[in-house]
Length: 129
Length: 145
Image (tube, rainbow over the protein chains, first blue to last red):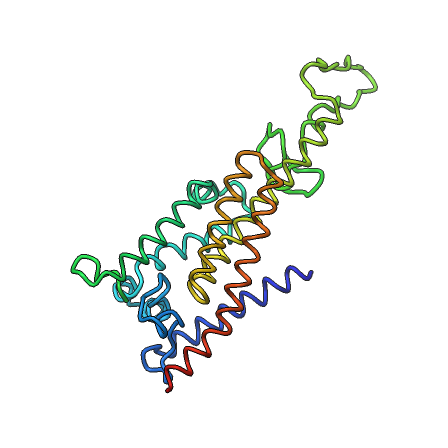
């Protein structure tokens, strides 16, 4: 009962957040919403651009969304689907995500991605938001 | 086949419930009801085929515990990824490292180590969350100045 209430609250919260993001363009907000790492150091973290990417995605601009944050647009749906179908043990398609190798791969990809999107040279600038 | 414990469906011939991990072998070993007219001889299972009840019980308990631990670790991995993106990157990354270490130890059967690393992963997730709560307003104030 308590668990169901928590899940319901989380789903409602996420839905409200996504609706807010669809209506509001994060680039137009004042003060400009940004992560503390970027505000303090000017470095991009792997999550930079996620709000703009979600805003673009919710308004149907998939290419723009991938441009803002390619990794998050690919990784987050995978993890969410795995989380949602976690109780459905016969859903073998995403079982590979729950292996130690997948965990270490996610960690290494996150670190490499963070470094790569902070390199201001031609092939890497497409990763920056 | 329906699991007698949790009621979830399982493929026929499964030895353990895919949902709760309960041993389903007992179900298949129950002899068929004896017909009143033509009594069929009871099929006596070979004692070598079935593990004694005590080991079967501990097997299914540790299987269920492992499954629970693995899904716990997975949920905290996702939490660590989310907090490292939204709140505090360095602390969140430490959380991801601990989640990955816990998952590796669970795979190798080192359950106490996995549990303590899961505990550390939780700690770093919360640390990242609260640091984020403090850092985001500070970033705003600096931005406004």
